[in-house]
Image (tube, rainbow, N blue to C red; front, side, top):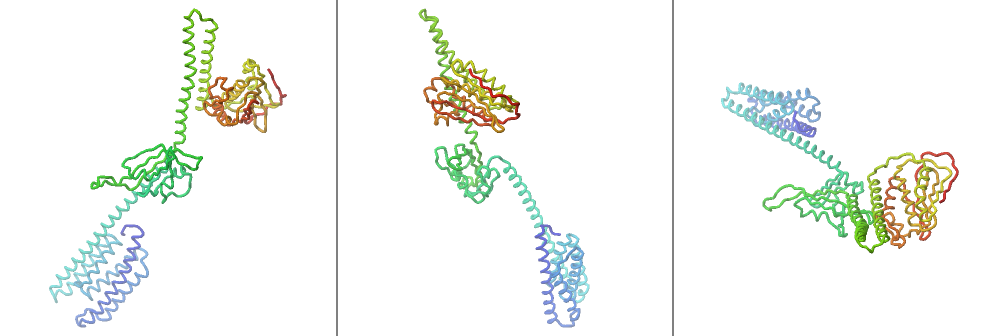
Length: 554
């Protein structure tokens, strides 16, 4: 059977059915006309025999048209009938040398389509047999009949083979085209699979900037579930540079001859939600026009990557290095200058011991400040890298007494009362002990540092299934405007009382990082000249036995 899929088979079957009906009708008309103008004596079969032959022709043609063959046996029987009828017609009505012998070409082709080479050879052999019979019947009356019949045989067989050869070439081309389409579809599916698994958004447009292909990451980046096909790239991705100027990706790509990359663009969901993007623009090269000496394109590829986080980290890193280098320079300069002065003083006879002691104390204070900053940076580094963040069971009561004991002397040195207000019932919590201790120590040391008189209180109480830690002082307080900034890196209030004490400006920034690592938030209440209160809440893991409320004062 001819190859080419179900559609090709259906079309071939329809053509055979119409041909099988049309040819007998034409032959009947020709037979009737030829018998009307031919003397009766020269006719091989009589009128009745002719009409019987035509009846069967018409019967087979109508049957073939109305009832398609269902299997190979049915098809083979019908082909045999057609061959017998055609043979009878050529021998008894028209003769092999008539133009209607060309109709045998159709039998050869149909036989080949239905039964391949076997059908071709059987149909050709049948025609040869018909030619032989016709020659035997008529060569005595006219020797030229041999030449005419053989010429007709050669013409029919040659034409049939040529048509079959053409059909076979078409089959080969069609098979090659099908294989090419399958391969192309496979390659396309592979490319689409690869593109869809990319984390970067990829959009392909035509020469007019209309999106024709995109991947799943594009929907995620643009925060939509709608189809992007048929939309203009500038409507989908309105971009701005860092100065706020609107940028057209389509215009940027129109004159491209090479791939370019930009990382200074912003995509704005709204005024408050801005995404920093790295955009790669690339033309889709199709051919090289030597006459124009320029490349032509079939469209453009846009690759979009969200670099908001990396850009923020890069800017934070640059700012951090700049500020840290500035903050370190001052105490190092003071300490180095003071020690140099001490060296000169020691060589001067009029320098007193008090003058040397004051200089050494000043240098020592700067070194202590540097050590404090290094300690803060170390704490921040541990929090950022997640070092020592493994959870452990912590007894809240023991932790509270340890903190009070640790900072009692420091509070006493400033003539402050360090109080512990412990709830009747305390339990245990599960978290990083190092992070929790550093967080509470940060609050306590800040409270002692910025409180000139009064008290600092560590209050621990329970509410529902949580334990609340609150550090309250009677210090200078924090203004409402500064409360929004206290968790920023290196922020220090402009209040002159804050500037009287040294500090790195990293304490509360680190505290916020540690609180995030512990899964909680810092709650701040403060009022100028009335003190401040910092509190956090952590879930209880186990409730201990009832204990009386205790309060220690020093």
